[in-house]
Amino acid sequence: MDIEQLWEKARDKTEIVRGRVKGLSTFAQTTVPYIFLAESSVNEGNTVVRKGNVLVEKPLIVLPQDMPQFEGFDFEKELEVSQEIVQTFFLMRGIRYPSLKYNNTVYELDVDETSLSASLEKHRKKLEKSEDVNTALVVGPEECWQFSLLFYIATLVGRCARTDIMSMMDYFNERE
Image (cartoon, rainbow, N blue to C red; front, side, top):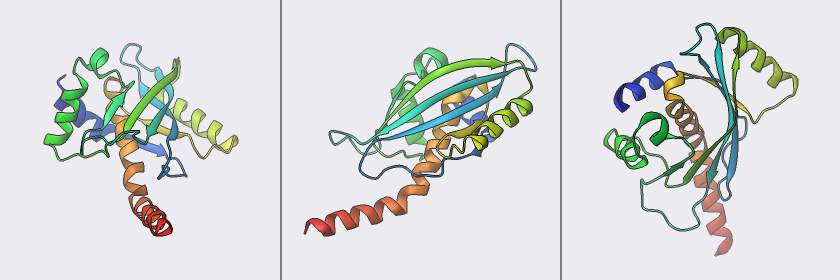
């Protein structure tokens, strides 16, 4: 599958089952934990469980506009495309991520020998029982998990935009 087909598949099949309650920090880095579930493409009836964090970093230097940096998403290794191609792909479609660093770390990759719906219910109950309001639960296609995670991060960025603008205005007004 080419990058366009992977993007469209992720767009059509990604479901944010349970999002994070808190938004992204306006002035500091934010760790966004997630559990990503996908039907296994190798063992039918099993579920691939990917647990990790996306660290959304505020840049230490001013980055060029519309040039986000994606680290740890394995575009080169798994999709055989460079980060520059992904950035250009987004730019050509009018998709804009703020010029921040998005650093993904997968700390657990496992297979549940159950169906996607059973695995989803298990993880949903576990998050509810522990009252975890920070970890997202996202479902999408296994072969384009990177795009599914970026969809989720984009929803957080969009949800926080108004609050970020207000926070920045307050910050600059206090400095005057």
